Length: 155
Image 1 (cartoon, helix red, strand yellow):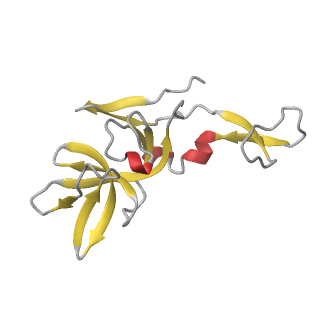
Image 2 (cartoon, one colour):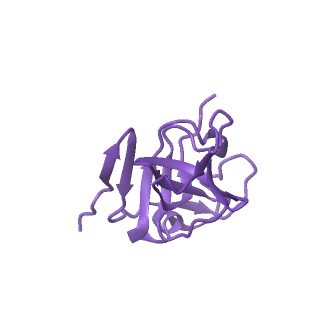
């Protein structure tokens, strides 16, 4: 049976939102031995199983999306330009959690903060002020960020 790829469902203003229709099973070797900062020996007899990354990263496949990040407003939360966010639409918004929101016709990823009865969307970069969400604004929380996928930086 041929698997369907991840499909682009919305593109605009530099954002790409993808819905996961079906997952190709990607299994990688899992070594039970602990390491401090190395790689287990392939001759090691500790290879226990293979891990299906879809099962590890996605709890609700029909309500899980991926969003490619553009910009640096969340870089201090390790969400840098080009990162892929895995978003679960079924998780409830919570104070202190990172959410993908649709604010005044624009996607944004920010930390939800509740202070003194007010709602704020906070960046993780001192160059960007917090956004106070008022009744005059159109805002919807689309989902909560569950994982961040990034290539490591080469130094």
